[in-house]
Amino acid sequence: MKRLLVSVCMVLVASAAFAQQQPAAPGPLVVERIQNGWIFSPDARVTDLDGDTGALAGGYLGRITDNAWVIGAGGYVLTNRDADFKLAYGGPVVEWLVRTDRRVGFGVRAIVGAGSATLPLSIADLVDERILSSAPHIQTGRRTRGLSRLDPSTTVAARDDFFVAEPQLNLLLNLSRGQRIVFGLGYRAVGNAPLLGDALNGLSGGIADQISGGR
Image (cartoon, rainbow, N blue to C red; front, side):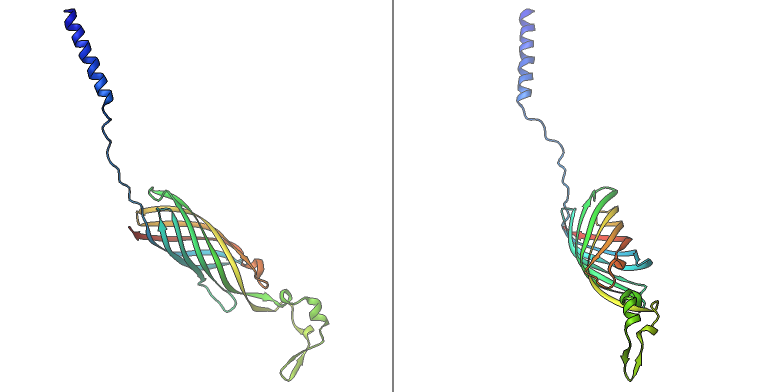
C-alpha cells in the first residue's frame, strides 16, 4: 500500500511539473482596424462680430491618421452679408481626436490663416475729432466742403485684411466609424488689422457633420 501511495504521489508531482513547463494557451486574437484616409467636415457656426451676431458657413477637408490626427485646410464665410458687414477667412487646419471608438469623444482643433472683413465705422473712429475741427476744407470735384461740417457719428464701410488663429474645443457624438456629429466652441483671435482691430475678435460656436473614409 505504501509503495502504491508513493507511486501515485510521484505521478501527480511529475504531471504538475510537466504542466508548468507547457506554454499557456493563447487567448482570442483581437484585430482593430486603424483608420487612415480622408475626412470632410461641413460646419455651421454662430459668432460674435463687433457686438453683432453673425452666421458662418464653411468647414474643412483633410487627412486623418491613426483615428486621431487630422491635417487639412478649411475656411468660413459670413452668410448674413451686407455691404458693411462681411467676413471671410481660411487656412491650414490641425485637429486631435480622442475616443473616436466610443459613443462620446473629444477633440481639439485650430485653424490658422488669413482673411478679410468689412464693418461699419464712424468717422470719429477713423479720424481724430481734432483733425476734423481744425482742417479748413476738403476738395471734392469742383466744390470745396469743410471737414468741420462732417458729422463724427456718420458711419462708413471700413475694410481690413488680417491674420487669424481660431482654436476650438469639440464634443464628439460618434454615430459610426465613419461619421460623427461635432459640437464646438472656439475663439477667433485676429492680428494685423489696423482699422478694425479687436472688433474682429470673438467667440464662436457651431455644429458640424464629420464624415471620414479610407482604409
